[in-house]
Length: 254
Image (cartoon, rainbow, N blue to C red; front, side, top):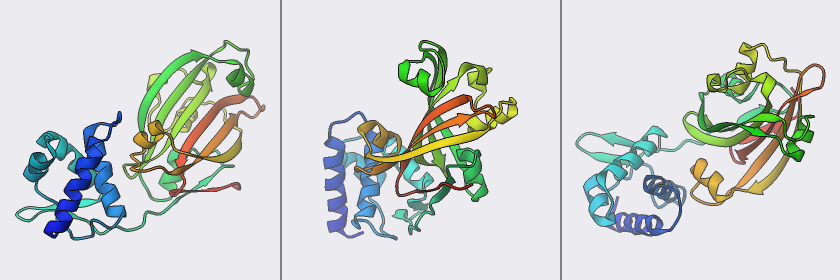
């Protein structure tokens, strides 16, 4: 990397790190470097400044720098070579996830069948009382207890969507036993899954979604609202998923 490019990167990082916001410092560092790659400021093969230089010029701790670089390395954006330093990896376009809105597979099985690795980062699991709108969607009386499950879906360690599910209490014996896949939990516990009703719309990502999905700038999302029914057409789950529009392609046929 030339001295000019090096300086432009440091100037960009300094400006981005100084911006106010709830996002942790290492994630702002991470997002700024990602944006520099997307904008062509950094190219494949460019070497990044040393951890020491980042620390001295940006006024942040070496722990923050190492944590940010570890995330970038984990996502395949940078590489490290002993004796040479940290460099930008060649970037290959990520394949989209083809997701059926009609087939009752669930996110994780769709990902696995396409040869990729799913994961889930849990945000919250809570029991709550259904308000009038949710009660109507789940065909329950208002004030009936339900579960609210909020998590981030990842593919190959990269956040792809934020999902919020509202589930009837009878379908969950122990909420803490739900792992990567809610639908796999249903299958293990003999919860009958019949059909899905789906609706897709679009909206811009708000600050919370941008932070959860590690987005460096505003992006349109695809919002998928689904109701899962049993074989008697009784609702089990109502969900809202906020999906990266550049990484999903939805089909309506199974």
